[in-house]
Length: 178
Image 1 (cartoon, helix red, strand yellow):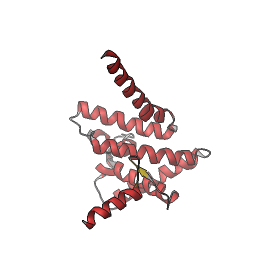
Image 2 (tube, one colour; image 1 turned 60 degrees about the horizontal axis):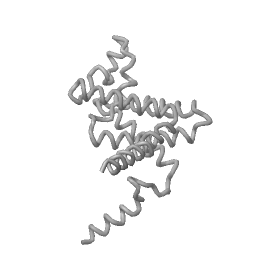
Image 3 (tube, one colour; image 1 turned 90 degrees about the horizontal axis):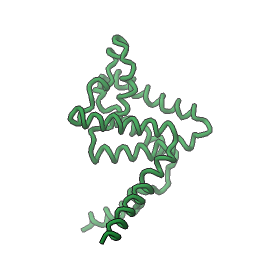
Image 4 (cartoon, helix red, strand yellow; image 1 turned 60 degrees about the vertical axis):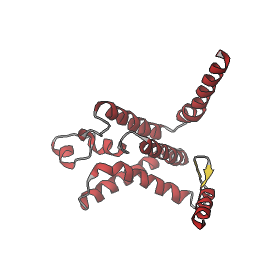
């Protein structure tokens, strides 16, 4: 009985190692910083602030320039929602897409940073021009990354949760015919 429990424990540890730790160690540095900070701040907010992103981390143009709270433009992009399943899925997508984009531009990390800065500045500018609430700027930044990724890999089959999207679409269409 003890052998079966240790086998299960070892299997879980190996699965965790293969599924999370190994890919994390292979993650490029900019992506690792972004994903790590997002997870850290979101986890702290979940524990300390009842799973709400602290107001001190939201983007506020007046407080950024008048009170010199220069962290606000950066931390606003790290907010992908409250800690939960939706957050974890969004974080996994950001991790995957950012990693692939950064690896493609690994020889020129300055171009990758310029791409990220362009997306961030464009989002902040459009939020200010259209007077939108900046609470969800992190989600829009993740959509920007997915858009760039999709233009690079246009026409390629992708895998979602180990199932080809093509297969998911055909299953959905077959269910709709019923």
